[in-house]
Image: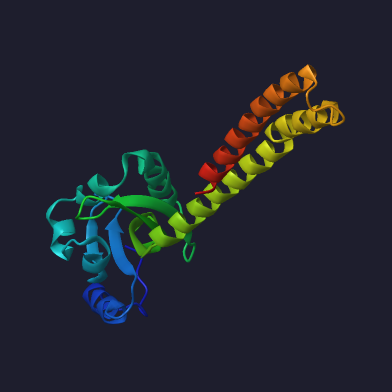
Length: 210
């Protein structure tokens, strides 16, 4: 193992991490790249995910089992990247992980090499995980609203113009000098059709706004 005389013993480092993390809403962890199991998690895991620290130590694959299935390729790619990281290099990535209550929460992890073996190969990763679920949901809501606005703009530029143009054209055909003109009946019938079409388009816009 590559040693640095200025580094604290491993247990002292764990205790220092514990003191630092007692009052911050970030989960700090140390993961073994050999077993992919957690060797340390701060107490904040209880608040963020509902699990006890010991839950992660009993089974090496416990952490892996919590990741959302769709995020496995991303997690695997980042683990592979961690093995080749330089000292002080920071790897940042986001993923979903299952809360004790069964729901999935979005997290952002910032990881760096914590320990290396005698060959200089990374063996442990130090990570700082923060719950970003509210941020992700806010961004997704903005995307949904933008999609709604784009749809409204499309409807305004195409679907509203068609019945509106028909209504304006039919109005010019209406014989105001002779309301009893039989042709006015046909004009009114077509006006009714165009008005209903316009009403449907407006209702669709309103429905898409909420």
